[in-house]
Image (cartoon, rainbow, N blue to C red):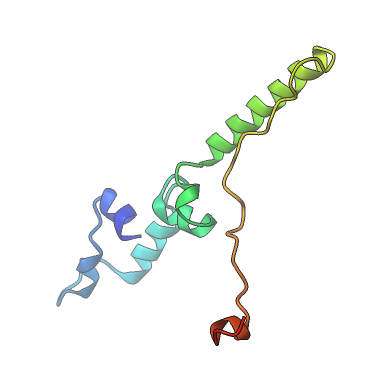
Length: 106
């Protein structure tokens, strides 16, 4: 959030001065309205791989994939089948660690 708010000219350190010029309510409002291209939005979606994957980019990729599939079908299925464009996963994958692994016995 610090980076995103700084990029729009808001310094969070102002919250902790003797006479703050920012209110926590105002900062929360700003965070709520950060664009989908922000680092905060990417972190909420699953981390750095989601950076740059805005709603517009997802829509454009879907259109390209649909056009490729349509062209493949109209061509009678000749040639290589179009491959989907790789996107970041919707949910971050997490590895489940067992107690035995933590104790070094797994």
